[in-house]
Image (cartoon, rainbow, N blue to C red; front, side, top):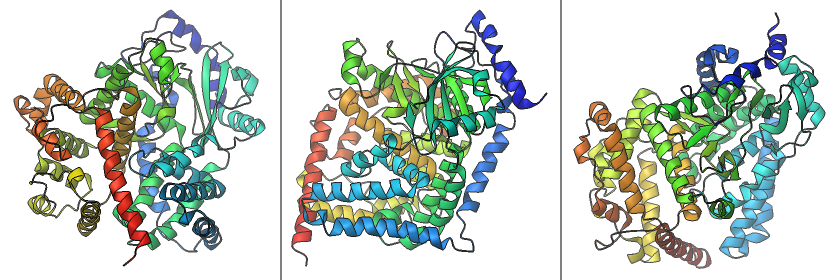
Length: 551
């Protein structure tokens, strides 16, 4: 029987077995009242998934390798779009206040990204998740790219669905909303009901996006080397390597079978860790293809709707604590984590559980990298800078042949940290400039999994500001480390040689790393934010004076 015809026939019979009992809790952390049961042995689209994942990873460097002929037409259009944006800003908002100037260039760049199409929109969406890594104006403006992507017409959606599933739309769906719930650069999502009555969410890939992404990656491979050494941030990121990381990330998103596999893997890890406060939507047993992903629908509060959550009796601090613990634990002991945490990818259920959605970007560490991450996180918690530097070498953030002790001495990591609030604006600016210069001298870069981890941690940092601004950060860190030591101490001792009895947070090390006085015994997020704002104002005032009074 033709596989696509088999999909149509199976979709109408699978509901019967799911009605018997929700007996798939051993397969993953899922919600109650299943629309269908998860039985990987019966999921046909799982076959050959690891080979597919490996092939996708191998394709990325080939796509960004400079090849002839040069895609000159597209290169010129891309360069022209950014030149127009910068020149327009230069003659309008540049001379306004620093904040207005940033808003102006951010808006013009966002419009350029939007005009250039799906690949650049996707890159902008990734930038929009960098709270704390990029200026607030950039993040706020580029966040509009998540919601302001025009959807494809429903007739095009119908054609994609019928071509992928091999059935008339009416044979599968009793209802399918023509208006999407959301439209992004790679795909759009529609609410629907299967002919067998299950409420579902249907993710459909844009019809031409795969071709457009591959074309634009070829263009980026020619433009990226021109940015090397031009600006500090770009140099630190290593533009050609960053393009390769972006290629690997976006190629994974172009095959929804990989995303569905990520959903099952993360759900299984959560179940094995008994982190049932976090759940994952079940992907459909048969309605998953390269361009279509049907999953059960999960309703709840949007992540940013704090007032509604609290009005319903949900402890938002507890929600954030459970989410952070599950994220760190899954990364440390399984090497798999959701790589694109932002408010649109988390739904808070009325019972306080958190549903993770959109697994197109998922971090995956091999065993060597996983152990390096364990050492890195333990080194941060315990104040062991040598452990941290060694881990960064293994992860590829620092060259493998550098001497760790030299790095510790050169960066003054073994000396008491300076309090930024005790420094003048000139001293603070010089410190940042010197640190960047030394990082570049060492050939520092940001590998994919480390970049995803940092981006996720910055999202969690921002979430603390609204969900738990009054909690004692020192107490939260101590509780997490003690939890890991108590539950996984034997494994940590076996894998990285850390004695669980010595896994204690040294508050003096934490205070020192932040430049805090010894008498400080607690630190709320509000207090930390006030310190950051003062530091930022000093830096900005120094930079503003530098522009108005050049040497």
